Image 1 (cartoon, rainbow, N blue to C red):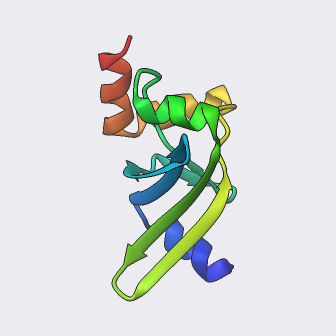
Image 2: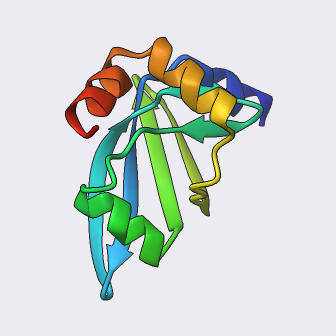
Length: 103
């Protein structure tokens, strides 16, 4: 477990697998933050994946680099503390662009 956490701390992207109407979808997401064994992502509310995750928050993530890969199964939560949102936006160019684009 500790090896997987150390691996994820160094990653910038993961592949996320989800489903809608019994149809699978995969996407590559940029990791904004990894803190306290929690991965944080920025998703515009207007994006299809946001609606898919609201309907079915069960996901599987995969990150791979070289011969090492980590797969995680879990549930997405949209309840992100405001302090983490602010820090993520301030320190990540992708999330900064999203907030500018969708204000």
